Length: 132
Image (cartoon, rainbow, N blue to C red; front, side):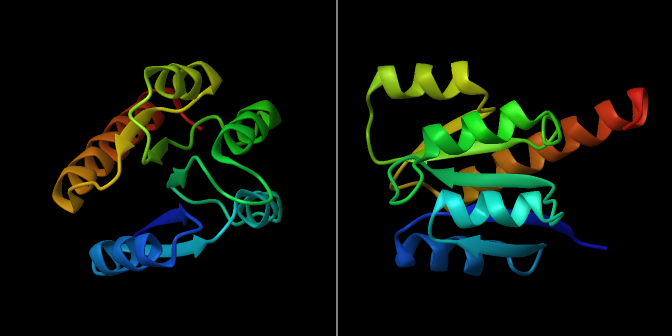
């Protein structure tokens, strides 16, 4: 069974790249804003990993991370943030809020694929060792 990725980005072109890059290896669902993605999570649609943009309408990436991590139900889902800003303050804020990784746009799909693979392997090893 394929692992499930959730991609959240208001740019249609980025969602297309993510869907095209990962559809052969993963089941991927995409959203154009954090609010719809959060509602999907809360309805029980749990991905194995989330890729999320920072700057979005309705709910930005910072608020999304805050809501996801505050719930307590989604703590073990790795969260990779994407941003067009190379601002160190944004990176630090992402990590302090609960993101697991941060990647600048435009990104190399092969690099993102490697980061996702590594995060999922680490998560699987942790869950094997310590249970759900």
